Length: 210
Image (cartoon, rainbow, N blue to C red; front, top):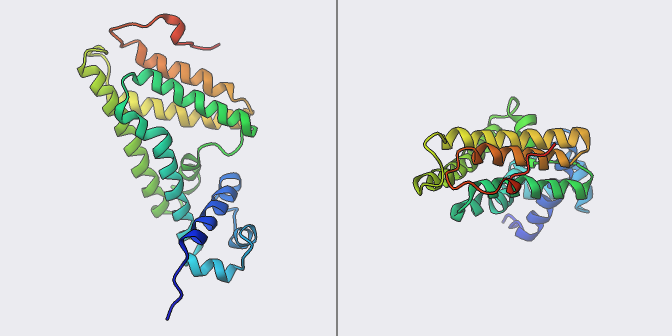
């Protein structure tokens, strides 16, 4: 009778694999390194995950859920999308400032590394970015319907632009080792929404940076 996998051990493997894959990338991380980080044999690791791809997809699911909780779910009850967008960038800038501008967005990293290599990885990333875009689009549309934004605001295009700025700013911040790039990009992203606002806020609330 096959031994049942221990969910606590599976989680420990996923957490260790995520740390290595986040810093090195998926393809540069081997199962031997993950097994060593978990203080187990490779054979024992393969008892819990049948292949590196299976483990990588589990890690991606784990990071998607974390990103969903931190960045996507708060948009459900968002009453000021521009402020939420600026906070998204500012929070990411604080994280990068604390870790030396390393790692960046795990989901974005997988998108860049694996979209042309693995359809399984590409589809998971695509589905999550679609979910994130749709959630921000919904927040913008609700605010527009309440009369907070002019008819010139295009919620779908605006949501796509914000996420494109966010992922691009993360890449630049890592390349230049400069977390302030995220702060400045966040001000610009919020500004893209503010220009359509009907109930204009004082200009000091939207710092367009230098």
